Image (tube, rainbow, N blue to C red; front, side, top):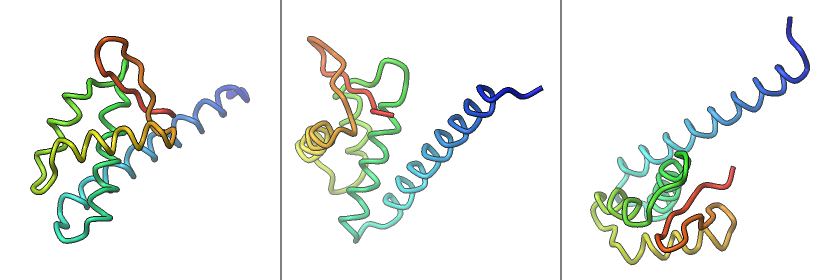
Length: 105
C-alpha cells in the first residue's frame, strides 16, 4: 500500500536522480566540446556539484585536481568558480580548518 509520504519520497528521489544525471550529461558534453567556453564553465560547475554531493562534501583540493584534468582549465579559475558558486548559493562551505564544500540541494 502506498502512502502519501511514500509517494512524496519517491517523487523527491526521482527528481534528485534526474538532476544528478542532467549535471553528469552537461559535464560530459563540456568535456567533448573544447571550443565553447560557456559550455565548459557549465560543465565544470556540474562536475563540481556532482563531486560535492557525496556525504560530507568534498575537499577543495580534490575538486580542483579533478577539474584541471581538462585542457585549458587552471587551478585559480576553478577556485574562483567555487567561490562564485558559494556566493550564488550552489555550494556551502562545511569545513573548518580544511576547505570542504557541499552541494546545496
